[in-house]
Amino acid sequence: ASRPDNTQYWYLSARTFMEQGDYQGAQSAYQQILQREADNTQIKAELAQARFLAAGNKIDPLIDSLVEQVLAVDAVNPTALGLAS
Image (tube, rainbow, N blue to C red; front, side, top):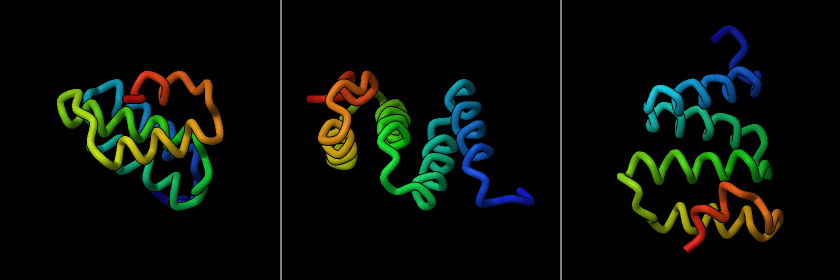
């Protein structure tokens, strides 16, 4: 909390939220990272996954968009491939 620009903190928080099933918290943490690293494809993929899980395993337009962005840069990203429709 004392170093809000520390992306490592946000990443560890996001992973912890995911492990606890707090997908909303994970989404917030991933979004904090993307505010600092807008082109980070792995974080986009993990954000899409958190959103997918929060929505009860349903794809929405934002998830589709994130997956498309990731696969355009990293065509073999396993997280994005798993969400590709």
